[in-house]
Image (tube, rainbow, N blue to C red; front, side, top):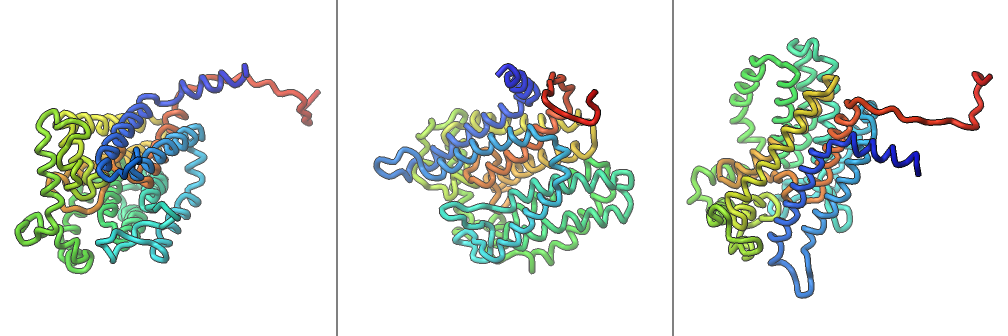
Length: 391
């Protein structure tokens, strides 16, 4: 036991307790709001809805996995990139064989059914992309602005973007684009390439509109401009806005939101969880949630800035981009600035896959933090070991 205590003490000392604590607080906050959002579903004698249970378990398992990953040198994880990438891509390909989608999206295949639960491979693919793209950037960093480097990096990024888009998950495809842009920026890509990319996106947008979007996806865009023509499409966002605005500064009170407890906002525990926060805890509750998410992102970027090598700096930038990108898109949906494209609010929305995989990413960041510290020496004594070098 005397040898174990120093190891535990050093493990705790070398853990970024600020990042882990912020993530834990955000998850507890999220589970509480999901519990509130699903209370009206409870049957007699039932204490907590399935969505809240799954999310709570995913958070607990996720934190345990994050701590385990944090104890492994990130260089070991990096060396395993072929396995990480291979498994993630195979799971995405499996979607096209046994995948299922939301009831209103017969064209989408976003989840793999695993008995009573569903797994979303695109969430794991985000972590795999962060690792592989960071390695690729590190290898090309001295020639990052060469056409060949841009072409190779572009092909690399298009693989996950294409797989996710073809599966029908356009929201996650947008997140991958954001991740790619942020990581390229952190690697020092010249601004001219970003300008050129924006021009290409604008030029290709008519083709994407005609052939890349399904009918329901196009209608969600049009509903923002012509809400009266698409009442069945826009009603989710309109009800969400009504719920959000009804909370005022301090909200109607936890478990007391009229829209939330009446089940009037569709997907309030998932994509629209921010409306639950706004209605029941008000503007103050919304600001508290956003502050937690911003602080988590800042701490991840700080870890990257203090890292000793470039690859880990890119990884931290990619992880921060996932959180910031999803926050912007999710809040944009709630405020009717963007169409509903099925993006969760990190740490707050229900969903086992999203909560579990984001903690896998946090575990990688914790490993980067741990193995970039000045480490205390351990005093190991080897006994009964015979070697050719023994006297």
